[in-house]
Length: 429
Ligand SMILES: *[C@@H]1O[C@H](CO)[C@@H](O)[C@H](O)[C@H]1NC(C)=O
Ligand SMILES: *[C@@H]1O[C@H](CO)[C@@H](O)[C@H](O)[C@H]1NC(C)=O
Image 1: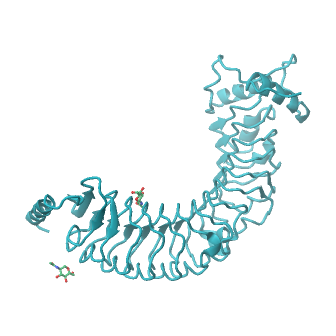
Image 2: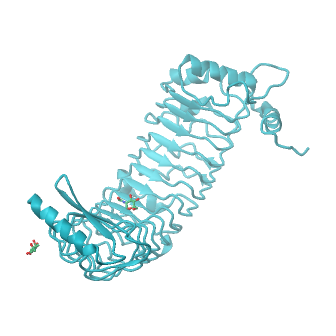
Image 3: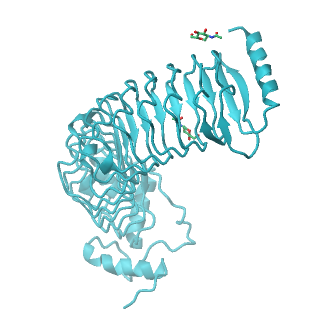
């Protein structure tokens, strides 16, 4: 592509734009031979995207119309963009895309429609997008996905549906039947309660499934199907799951790396729940309602390196639960723990788990027990959160007996002391 031509069309476009008020201002950038047009709004009024602003250009490869106050898109607005591969029209006020408006542009592999006001799509809207790889539909008001809408997208790999108004129970279970190559999908911030259990059955290589804030009350069947052996990351955080008492729930997820169950209301876990996930490296149980964990919960799960149990109500931590893992990072902060097993870090070390980061702050520690732990983390050079351990803040409690009492029968005494003296809570007697 001759350089002179680029300058020439650029000047022409800018000249043209100076006469059209309220039209977004477009600039052409030649980034490493990628022909990139970026538009920014010109004033504070909404704009109807018409033919002529960005259309009819065989050189444009990348087109960014982000936050341009576009409220409407004329049917021919993207006409004759034969070379276009990347289209970002996110952060506008588009509530409707007419059938045919995206036709042509068969080379497009990246389409970003996020943060608009779309409620749905006419069937056939994506018919001429055989090369689409990435489709971002997040942050719209989509209520309904018509069966067949994604069928032409045979190469789709990345689909973000987060932050819409979808209702799992109304989604057609065959909606992804042709888009079998998807490897990332997010339904975060939709109501996925009672979604059909075969919803994802056609996916052959799903790697990441995001179900954050989906009003889910139990591990959904569609998230653990037999074809999901491929899954690496499962995010079910900020939901309303109360228990994980089915030992076979994750039986198919034997390649899972990361399981995020943070901020649910989980009270109990079956000791074998995580065992089928033999490759699990990271497990996040932060912000639940656990009061204890089974004695063998993570035992001999060789890949586990990172466990977050912080912000629960755990009173006792069995050292056995972590034996035979490769634990490096353990977070026990903000629980109700008064003591740990004697030589806790050494015990773990002897069983193969070499801690490098260990958080245990904000627990009702018996001072003598906390001193033991601090001696150990210093000895083994394990990093910990010692911000409050500067001698100026109360961090632990003690009775007249200055030794670590390792038995649950004493817990209530120290918890009560801690709440009263350290947290300053008024306890009714
Ligand atoms: C643009 O590309 C299309 C398809 O490759 C071609 O048919 C058309 O003639 C080109 N237009 C111009 C003005 O070069
Ligand atoms: C789409 O656009 C939004 C907002 O402009 C941005 O945050 C997001 O990262 C984009 N998505 C992709 C896949 O690039």
